[in-house]
Image (cartoon, rainbow, N blue to C red; front, side, top):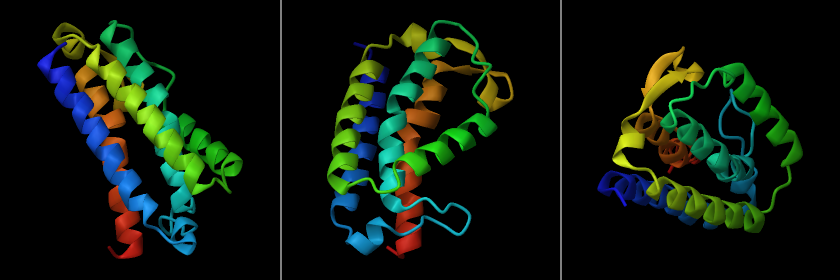
Length: 161
């Protein structure tokens, strides 16, 4: 196992654990609070969202690590995916969301641990970065790793904590 991949995996686990810990302490009203004026998704849906996209984020990193360009993932595609997820998971329970978060973050961390330094360093065009050649490590850091931290910060902001 690569030291770098282990450090990335631990950071994924840390972010997911912090999100889970914070979400466990929310009231039902807080769980149902929209995350912002521009993003009407409730906090509970956001927690489930973070959990549900770990497999996608890891697969994108694996694709880049193989040297294959990612051309079909755009911000419009992500916006539609998020909208559909919001409709389908509007009443998600805390138990279900947190279980999925724990399971998928653990699986994502395990998958990241399998990356070699050579794979982490490999770059390929990435459509979310306007076709710029991004490394697999960047994709892991900017997506699977950052995602829980990003949404936890937004949740804390809307709740004033």
